[in-house]
Image (cartoon, rainbow over all chains, first blue to last red):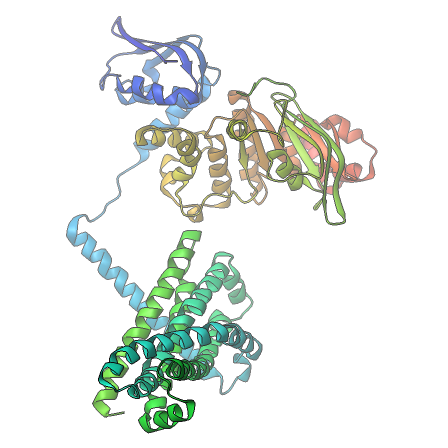
Length: 373
Length: 259
């Protein structure tokens, strides 16, 4: 069905004949009819309503286009059989007229300079936010000495359990499998030179120095960094953090510091487990694939170990823990207003903490080479 | 297609709902007629929201039937369901505006879903719906978190009206508003009701709203519903109903409305 719209001149103005079906269901066809209206109409407009049914949306669209073409609300008249909500429509027309007359365009700086300026201000605010966050954490930590209650033991234990104990299976499994893969690839290359035994050196040094701690940190960033951001983010949305503040509790002390401390405690322990599982994986593959018996594997392993091999891996764990926990909790505290922000900042937390972990690892590598650690 | 002039618009018969061993509704009957504003009242936990969810088909009741426009809600085919959903508008207690969309986008959401329209027309329709509920057109650019409580209620109403329904469900539309905003909302509702020829079902605790707007009231007591006009309710001897309509809070309102 169509929605015919006939416009014809009448006197010093126009006569608009409206007939057919003008319900909302017909609005796609009505749209094309409205597009055909001229951009300028002068004088008065008389709307002659003979529509079989009319929805308020299509009727509004018609009157709006007519009004935009020139005539003031007072110059639009109605006749025939107008819809029952005509009074409401006319009132809305007047309100719209008034609303736009009162509206002044806001003053803004446009163009590339404006964009650059906004970006710079935003970055400065972000930097200030990070410094502010670090300062607040430091302030809470400094209270531990004269106010032991600031250390929330029960909360700390809960986070140690959630980020540590429950992560043991997945960390073990991944460390084991990756180490098997490295040993397998190494064995393929080294056996061509008859240097099979060096697979043990490869596995030992790779796992203890880099892979154990790095894999653990990445898994924990994915598991716990996202959980931190999401938990604290939802609390922000529910005004729970505001409630804490109103009760005289510091959200940094109650929510952030226990998570940071828990991760500092947990990540080195997980790293030790990952190291052990990684060596076990290397030993198993050596036994099956290269027929190196276990006593020979362990003897060779001891020879390849330097005094700092194990510690150079483990010492990085607390640093990674601080990075992961701080990024996660900071992004969580940034959540405002909407569910989309929560999702976005949780993603940012994971991506950024993994990036920071890898960046820190690269810096450690350079540092250790420089100081011969 | 649904016959939107079917009377009664809503017929609930023998509705039974329970959570575990806790019975909420047991043989609840309710009828809403064309073009009336029907208020649903009941104590906290009496099952007002459960009733609404059952009518909307968001919850499958343990027993009984719900008919909208003479069609059983439970046994509708998917295509009929879609046209049924388009025939009514709902506002939820806390607005339930999608937080990642602006107010205007929220209003356009059902229109985008069910029709293919140009952006220009969508903007025009959003503008109309916002004006209709008394919001300035430029507030359409704001996000729900930037609105006050009263504005959220109005924006939710604008979204509920976007598909031009003949039937409107309002869940506590004036809860959490100051008396002046609540009174303004009542006026708005009455005006839209008469202009758009709406049938309204409203859950409310606000006695002012009840007395000012509702033509009939249904009270949920003893897991059932007693429906009557306001005058009838005032004479009802049931202890809960008597306490509700003759309590300290009710007396002032009564004096005001009945002189």
